[in-house]
Length: 122
Length: 229
Length: 86
Image (cartoon, rainbow over all chains, first blue to last red; front, side, top):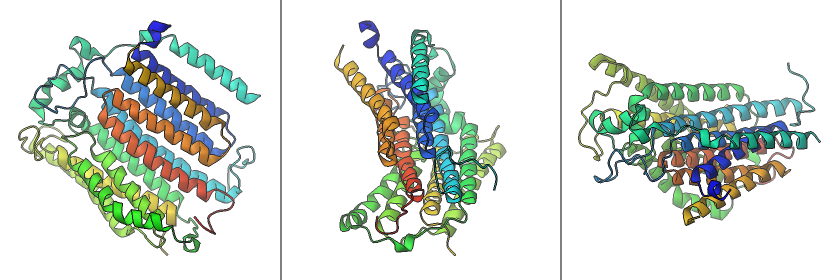
């Protein structure tokens, strides 16, 4: 247990999987539509953290040539960081579109409780 | 009752995932093999960009960035179509307090200058087009929140967004004409670390930043005040 | 158990506590502020993981613009609206 806790990979993975589980819990057990979208946001932060941890190597530095002394052999993996950059922007656009749909649903039904919203057409 | 049942199920899921943490694969850069090792070693020669992540996003994997810009455009189009007849009572709101108005007048030029600095130096320092555009859109939101009768010029926003998107594809086709492939780096490369270096990378990032800033600004404007009659 | 591991453990613990608070709170604005705090601590963890590009994008987009859009949506879908004052 002590060896596991002093390994930084383990701590980061604890955070990433914990956020994923808590985000899913929030999506499954909320009655308000806006809280479901908040849970989706938390789960997406967890997934992005997990992807960046996969590319981390202990003891190496950020992938930018800031001075002449940093060689290409002492950098962390830059490929997961490029993928996570795309993922964050797509996450915000999905959230914005979901909130626009929620505003329209509220204008028709005057409530945000998912037990009360029953009709799918009109 | 249902909430605790879901909580127990997800606790089991979390415990099960944590058992396999030690078996996850390490990055192949440790052994000197793999695609990302090729990007690290050959970035100085192919594109003289100091920021390797920018070189991957714009040059080596530029087609994925084109797909991401398309997804952003589709989401904003859908949002503007859904919120077309939005009713809003912006005229009845009272004026913001004195601290907010005076503070905004002091700091708004610094926010816009910081956003422009982030995306112009995208190939030298961390950042790039996406956070630069987001900072400018947050500045526009601050203007909406402080002044009661501020409104964004929607004509200019639409023109800037369309021409930036078209400019990105035109730069790709120019690379196809002058080189071997779509989005080929055809401008001269220069020395690493200077502002005018890395070929076509700063041009593409400036176009992406204009597109993201005008799109997110139009999003904030539509949600705050609806359309002009 | 050097200093860096203690800092990382504290940050992860605060982040998980904020996420649990976001589930438990009943008020929508309080839940939104807890989500913004999760996004902010994730951005700090990205700096510890030697990824400054991702940290800047997450801070500007996740903890800035997403919270602003949620605030507008919450105001538009509450019963009182915003007719008297901000």
